[in-house]
Image 1 (cartoon, rainbow, N blue to C red):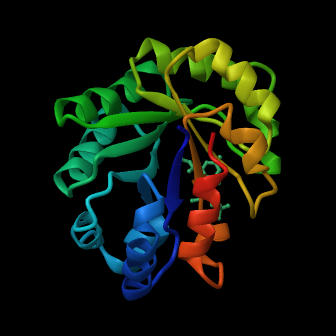
Image 2 (cartoon, protein in one colour; image 1 turned 180 degrees about the vertical axis):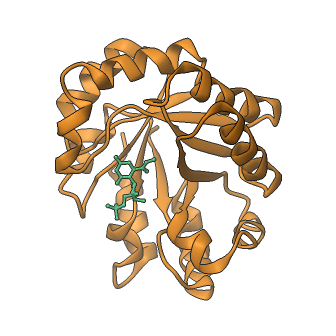
Length: 211
Ligand code: O7M
């Protein structure tokens, strides 16, 4: 069953909690990133934790090993269940995120290739493949791969095997959930759900097209 992960990129705490609560029956996890945390503070993690869903920290951690360690320790101390980190920083820095995650019983996912048009500038030409190899080498739990390019998901799957692939870019960015859902372990969906007139209805609709 492909998971449905709500990307909760709204800026108001009350709105965030209301959307998360209404969608909770149809989603498998909530991804929280800079927009929501910078707007509302880290206490939003405790508010959302009441729903009982895994909380994924999308801070795309991308620093030297020591700073990555400090960031990831703060992430798990705040109550997150997983962290997303960049892989282009190299194996030592990425491995630190994985080690901290695992020491807390959590998970770490490495961004292998991004979904926006400009991502092809640097991620193509073999870089995404090398980052996927790195994700395997550092024992990450999985990778992030673009729903906007299903053929790239197929290619990256060849490298990472059964590791998890979470895929953003469905809906607002043009990715087709039907085409992507069968290729990945989870689709990450933001605006199509939280900006819908009825977020819960949209989450329910998306939960039904999952393989
Ligand atoms: O569905 P959207 O386009 O409103 O939101 C997509 C979310 O996924 C949003 O939070 C993005 O920051 C994130 N995302 C991408 O859209 N593309 C990527 O390549 C990577 C991510 C992401 O989640 O990285 C972990």
